[in-house]
Length: 192
Image 1: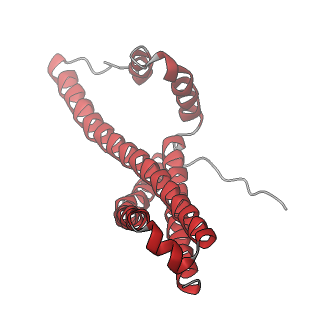
Image 2 (image 1 turned 180 degrees about the horizontal axis):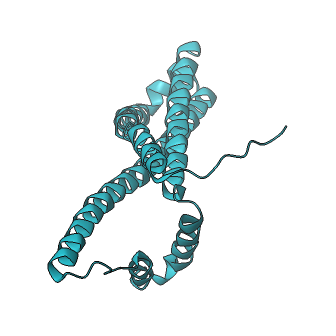
């Protein structure tokens, strides 16, 4: 299969792509709410099963009950993984918004200072700011920061692509959480 060569995106195309990705990522909170309710239901279900273990095991059977608990445990683990990814998506969206808001303000102040000083060629290097940030990153995250920094220089959409990957995994884990929960309920229904 032949790959198609696409010219690099213009600044307007990059901004539009970022806006489109962010609009999809904004639905992460809704998925997280549903997964949270399901996680709460799973916790309540497991608590009821454990509290009434003797009655539940006589109704369903010991082996079947063990399998139901394992299914609910797997659903819970997928729910916790979904929560983690939802937090990552939310943080990335928040950081992106904060940077955009601050960036526009800073650039506007910079332009005003240029006009006031009469110096039209006052320039600044955003790379210095990014390298300065690296000094406050904890030692155990510096390698990841450096890698993300380098990838961000190569691909201006790198951060958004990472967020989109987190989002896709969040949807997958939320779906698996739901599937395992339904299978557990079905398993109980069939074995009673």
